[in-house]
Image: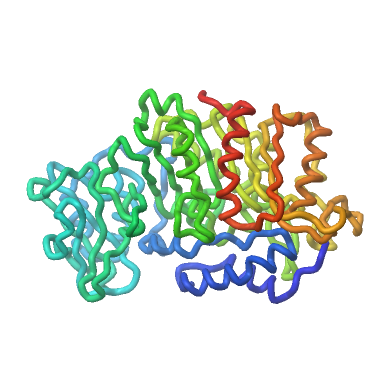
Length: 482
């Protein structure tokens, strides 16, 4: 395997550990600066921790809350009791209320003709007001109660005083000091328009929207991560459309729907909207443990062993995430109706999910997959997705890569992996995997599709340009309604 420049390795590790103390602009600049050399050296994506996930500021040190992912909390909380929790202005009680409502009824909270809005903003501000369609975007109409250090605010609105229906109404928070309209990080239902991200008071049924469930703490992996969903227009939770829905499960959740993600994100919502309304897309955010969670064995980039927790991540998917989404939306999300997709290390863990028959998935899309992981260090055992034994055909698979190779693919160090040529975007190792899969019984066009986008870089913009092809290929290979 080609050696990794020490400077690139340090950037990679530093970004993999970025957290709420990392400045979003600094992280974004470092990630973009690192992207090209990292890709050239390893065929790895930079860790993909979109620093913009920290706009969900109230989740940064949210209390650990036990979740029963088999059933959503259907009990309607008494609005006055929740207001009392917030009014205590005790940071722990306030944040716990934010977190618990986010995982049950969702924000804002409705009760007997009133609406409770609450937030935790990044930083400290002297005052904030709720603004939105409910009050004609009047910045003085609904001043919020300020708690403690000036990052926590709440306000109760009587629906009788609003100027529009809560259904279809957008909202944000307004800070007069900065004349700024702020993204509501707590909003369960949200979307994007020409002014950026906004929260829905309640999303209209005839419009696709996004939903989020923040800071889930797994029994299998310790780093909190958000769950997200793309809900198509006309979708009825627990109704006929839910029971007939195809499900798309995605890794790196903060990068697949959001247009302000790195390189513009994957635009999965646009790809799905162009193909009808029968797919609900679920996404699991990555976290600082991404290189552990998405890799099936340990490897060494020059700073010691890293990786090997993919089985724990798959347990999170099977034991926690998928049961939660099934209970929340009434979807089947298993067997031929389930497609799993990811890129780079996310593609690698998708292949691992296919080998492990996660939820008997119908199709997996592995884009620019880092299938040489496990052979990077000279001391590595060479346990890769390529040299592991593929026994028969499980889920149908879509593979792709961009880049290309100068000369020919080769395995000059005789570790069983053709990753020693001057190639990019994991081109050679994916060709090798293609051959391995065909020898295992996969058939082109029936259970296997391969695409090459010559010269394409290793980033979200490239994956966005190919996600539609991946969706179409899986549909041709049997990804269908339950």
